[in-house]
Image 1: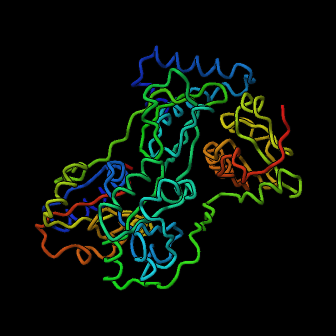
Image 2 (image 1 turned 30 degrees about the vertical axis):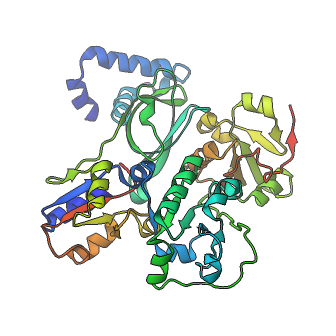
Image 3 (image 1 turned 180 degrees about the vertical axis):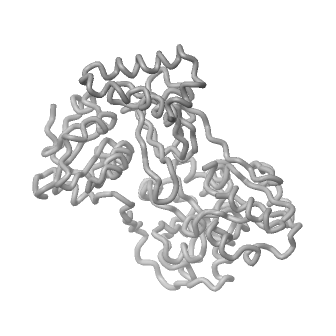
Length: 249
Length: 193
């Protein structure tokens, strides 16, 4: 993408065009901050964290923000969903930068900052909320991505409460021998899916899971290519949220 | 026709080997399908290279998924790999690769994987992360433009960057670029793909 734009600019007569090929992933991997757009801070499905101390948030804060001042961040880390995009702000750059690095080191993939911190938000005309804060609970629900099945629907299927559904476990037979398999589920390891396609009915909806969702995603792409009505579960099945009946080995 | 042209250029020994391996693989089938086989083998040989972004790699299932083709014609292909597959580290999620593969029985196996490097348009130079950081730190006058779709820009972009997705530049051309055509203009996106 960067190369096609660079080529286009060159054709338009720009003389000093360069391409940062490694792009945004390389930038944030170095620990350099990225900034969320104000519309995203306002409406995006994010966890917005206000790192300021004391009374400051009561006097004015960005709507939807959760107050976790920097010294509390470490102990509250486990309350932040790992797959949530997190946006941070404070009133000083050192604090947000430290928090950004801490979250990155902890394994959070999508972390961003508010442009110009709280002051920048106010200066750019962003909405502000004032008054007492009643809850510091993080309420964040992931929006299902393309091809994903919800845990509720998946659970219904393995319990046998969703007719015309064919559930595939894409893990290896060794993993199943050790950990068991969900009820109403057929084991077809990911690598065998292309040659065992004839075992998968075309007239039923198909759900696929594996241990974390990575292989299920790949199996999903393989089946969608072959015109199946298919969805996959993006969830670590050892997560208590899964709560599906298992036939133990 | 195609078979004849190819046969002219491939040494006879290699050709024989191809035909023989083709026969060996299909030893269970009836002899009625024998005749068009050499042509089929030659065509397969041509098609045994895949280029595109890696969707994912599963070390447990020993498979690699890669997207080939663009736009509506884009599709994901899954290949197996084994200990003999070369350059496995280049099959990294989100990065573009070139995969050579071969058919073994029912399965497609990756044999050699190489990184697919982005080709820079003429007159455009690459900038690395450290140099870009320094330019921003020194506040060197430049226009930094994010070429990814607007949604990705909104989620998180480099400091001072503006959003100029590819379709926007194609439509609006110089209108969305700085007036001064000699000013440093840096484009970035979501990595090498």
